Each structure stands twice: as structure tokens, then as C-alpha cells.
Image 1 (cartoon, helix red, strand yellow):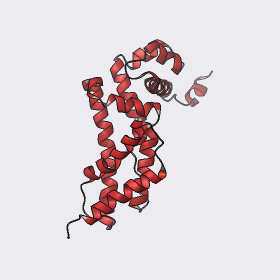
Image 2 (cartoon, helix red, strand yellow; image 1 turned 90 degrees about the horizontal axis):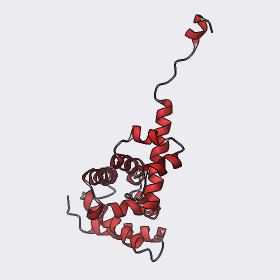
Image 3 (cartoon, helix red, strand yellow; image 1 turned 90 degrees about the vertical axis):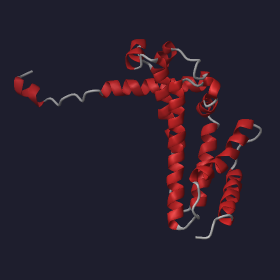
Image 4 (cartoon, helix red, strand yellow; image 1 turned 60 degrees about the vertical axis):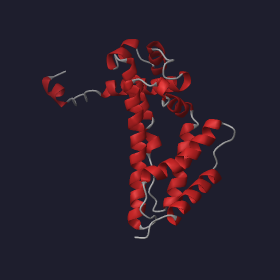
Length: 202
């Protein structure tokens, strides 16, 4: 290879392979946490499932708890999204259906178990707080937009979130029947009707 040819070769993008390896490790960790719980997986299994050497897992995450925290944060992102179609009723119904769907997955069930105080370490508690804060912020932004447009009267978005999400957890955690679209419709109808009926005149 001549000097001119070498000079024409594109530079390798640093971190490309390592980024893929890290992604594979996080995916494998999330799957194992969903299957075995937060305390139930080993680095050897993470490496085998990710298709990487065990040293790659240790090198990227020497702290086992930090690996779990990063996997939780990455794979809980979808639970924090709330669409804005301009129809608050529809958006809240879709939000509840997505929430129920997430909670019904193995990973969602693991998250619910991890919220219990007995399972919390400081780092894990901080990660779960971030997940819940992200979800609350997304819902708050959607509700605030609805208030600004006149779809809703002024309302405490945190209270609204608790009112609509509580019944979802009750149905899903009981496991007696699936959470349905009609369930979501009825919850949103009742909560929004109550908010509108009790709103203070502006």
C-alpha cells in the first residue's frame, strides 16, 4: 500500500464496535433481569447471551449494580412516552394501554417488584426514581398542553396521573384478567369527567 493510498483510506470511527458491544450487553442484561429478577443473573450468563467475552462485560461495567441500573433506564424509556394527537382523551387511553402492556411483560413485572422497598439499593432506587420522574414529566407536559388549549381546566397533573394509572396497576397486578381498551376508556372518562365537574370557575 502506497502512502497516497493510505492517505485516502477513511478513518475508522472510534467507538463503533464498543458501542455495539455495550448495546448487546445491555440487551442481554435486560432480558436476564426480566427472566430472573434483579438479583438473579450472573456476568457469565450476560456474556453468553450477548455473544461477547466475559471480560468485555467487566471492562464496560465493573460494577454489577451499575449494569442493572443502565439496563433498567434504557429499557424503561418507552414507558415514559405520551403521544400528543390533540385529543387528550385518546392520548390518555393510549397511554394507559401502553402502560398496561409494559407492566404485563416480564421486564415490566420486574420493574414493579423492584419498586418495593425491600429490593432497593441506593443506586437502584435512584434509577427507579428517574424512570418514574421521566414518566411523570411526559404526562405533565401532555396535560399542560391540554390545559393551554382549553381541553382541560387547570389540574394537578401528578394527581391526574395517579388517578388514571392506579387502576391499571390494580388490574394488571391481580392477574385475574387482561387490561382492555374498554377499561382504559372507562378510567379516562370517569377521571376527566370528575376533573371537569370539580374545576373552579376561572
